[in-house]
Image 1 (tube, helix red, strand yellow):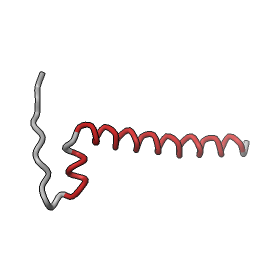
Image 2: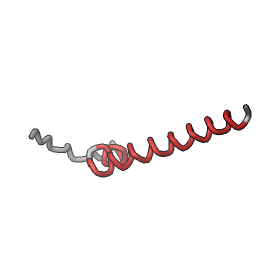
Image 3: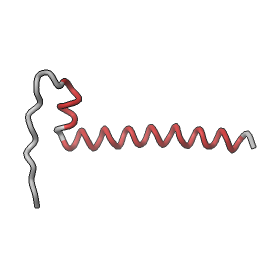
Image 4: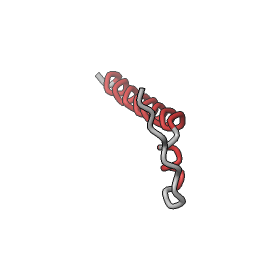
Length: 52
């Protein structure tokens, strides 16, 4: 197994750099984005089907 050490967050990167270099928070962020995107997509599709 290859283990890559995370680079410590820099002071100018802000919170995005801190989230990106933390595997747990990065996975949670990606999951949240996919979930919210899926909800908007399904709502848009269901609105289209209701109009038919």
